[in-house]
Image (tube, rainbow, N blue to C red; front, side):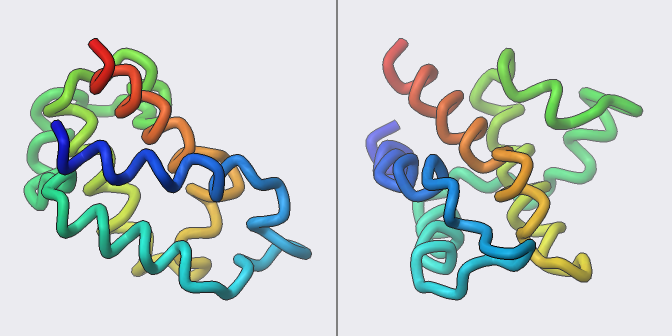
Length: 113
């Protein structure tokens, strides 16, 4: 869990309401650092698609965050970090909808348990 705890330093960044400015992601290095750290610490399940299809078919993934165990959390990190860059607006939705923040709060809860 110690490697994952390094991600918790990004909570203040995602709590900042100015992260999105005029509908566009503020261009800075913090989001890139968050994504890089997520990959490096091993929180991303690269088989997230298969895992989510098996464990939560047809579910609204954001709704799974508050009760996610560590395996589900890894799949959700994978979904929101690995899939979303291919969407037109990059990571705008997970930032705007505070999904990254919710994932980090859940990670914090699990790391304190």
